[in-house]
Image 1 (cartoon, rainbow, N blue to C red):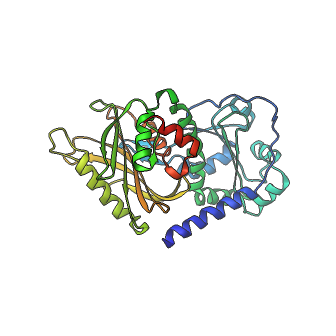
Image 2: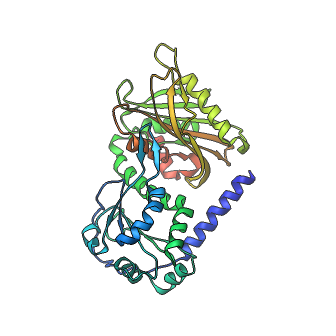
Length: 370
């Protein structure tokens, strides 16, 4: 419990500091903005060619992080452009402008012109490295400015802040993806209402998922999409009543997940089952829907090695209900790259809400579907 309190304090302090930092941009607020375009996993980087040569390894370490699905796939790929080309790319989804604050390069001067003197002073004092602007030139766009007092400090700060830097782009990417996935016409409101009425929580259920297992006794729900095909998606929700936050540790998490999949994720002849592959799995502390949670990313396989794929798992303690929740999404798509598919189930997991987080009016509307 003490670990959770320390983590929440760190998140709160970071948020307070972020809102105290103000900055100015030369932009025309009156113009209607079109939606940002481009590849979801491409970041356009505006930098001087020589400076980029020095910074590239640091940037790739952060944004080019490899995930195994099991094929190695980069989270983002970077495309460098000169700052004098920026007008052609102001409609793109993900942009980074990077240079030391006192650089006399074109990129450095452009960044200086975008920031007010107070922010430049914070950068020079090494109090601020990243300045973000949402929807600067297009809707659903993130423009990130990275700067420090020197090249060495800039490289160091990029690495030191790698989790936050990556999170900013992942967060807006997830928001864009949810907007494209969500469609009220193709929402299975009856299943959502059933979950809310019987279990006190809700999750967005697309029309092409079906409820494969609904075991109230074992507190386990399994949603499947396209079973028996070469592109399956699985989502399960499991909860433990009267739980202790001390259960939030990686060993307990792996044990619970393996027990669940050994019981429920089995072949049709009941001879083999799903388990976690020890290689490549990682568990980190994250802010999941404003809660302390453990996020696990890794690979699953049938115990005979016949099938496998990636999974993402969020496990957290809900204090008001004294429940441990485990939300999990898996992919089986042997013929395809799976980075975008696992992001889709991740985004669906992030639609999760407990009953107390739903407004009375919305709750009433949902329950009308029963």
